[in-house]
Image (cartoon, rainbow, N blue to C red; front, side, top):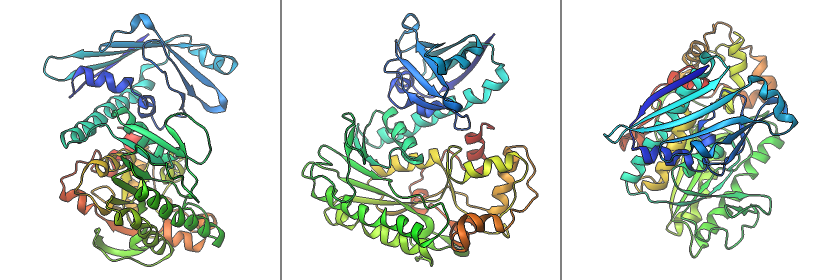
Amino acid sequence: MSIKHSSVVDHPCEDVFAWHARPGAIHRLIPPWQPMTAVQEATSLADGLAVLGLPGGLRWYAQHDPAAYVPPHRFADDLTAGGIRSWPTLVTRRWRHTHEFSDRGDGTTLLSDTVDTTVPGKLLRPTFIYRHRQTADDLAAHRTATEQGMTPTTVAVTGASGLVGTALCAFLTTGGHRVIRLTRSPGGGSDQRYWNPADPAPDLFDGVDAVVHLAGESIAGRFTEDHKVKIRDSRIGPTRRLAEAAAAAADGPKVFISASAIGYYGYDRGDTVLTEDSDRGDGFLADLVADWEAETAPAADAGLRVVQLRTGIVQAARGGTLALLRPLFSAGLGGKLGSGRQWLSWIGIDDLTDIYLRALYDHRLAGPVNAVGPDPVRNIDYTAALAKVLHRPAVLPVPSFGPRLLLGAEGVRELAEASQRVTPAKLLGLEHGFRHQCVSDALGHQLGHA
């Protein structure tokens, strides 16, 4: 059985093929709703081997076929055996995936995926819809950056293995940029450097154009004093020392981008529309974010352009709140939290990576920037949208004892039932284009129901 999916991508054939050939492409193309991860990227589309991880420690080995490699028009890979952990995947009997790129003569490309397999085409269609949209949207974001004067850039990233870091690093490398992952373990290749948060090395940022600082203890969890200390200690000191290292580098970065959070505005601001000029709110997270952002001062004082991305609730099937809610809603047990009237300022993970890219090249962005979608929604509307995307009802309110058991009373107030109606005023003022204008589109793309 042969399954084919085609779409027109508004970019030249050479650019579309090159995007697929760069490091990170496999990470950008694996559908996030599938229980699959990239263990090893193919070093070459001509004859490389890609290894995908499956539940239970199983492996999927995709061997690229040299005979089918015709750049920039075609490459192909075949399912192959790779040891005992790959044997169960061979039950499909065959899987040959041919990727074709046809120049349409007008600067656009007909992108086609053809799979020879026994797997029903109905199961694969959402995968290829996702892959083609990712390809087109990523290329569009990088083209905008190039048109605005961005050239190949070397970016040092902390927190590169986290949810946002993994997506951002793959997004940057497929765009032709070099990413240096700052890790807390010595060793690694040329694109990794050891970072000691307590005492960064003097040469940490040699040859680096920009820094993206994402590292920090997860805020999710029961708000015990111990947990709050860990959250704070993982951000305050390390951010200051990193900013000092960036400021002191002789051949170092000109841009310092630090993750931040909309918690700055406090846990309950009612229906007030919040912009970057709004006052700081009340609560643990408001205090934390204010202090966290202040620790970037050494970089700003040294003349670096500093951007603090106040991030909303990230919508990503692989992590965060969506990964927690998805099983509940899929079982038909989802519903509103509390009154359901609280505002949720969300951001799709691909829109978030676009905003980080823009912060790297757009010199008009400095200081706090609200990294949220253009249309915040109330909790009751969010739950209705998620239920609709999953084709499930959402009529059962979440019992109050559930979030309290997981987060504690303070955690419920600061996280689960927080209400912040935040708008991306600075980005809208620059006419920034969002991939997902509404939360339903972001959820559908992440969950395979576009």
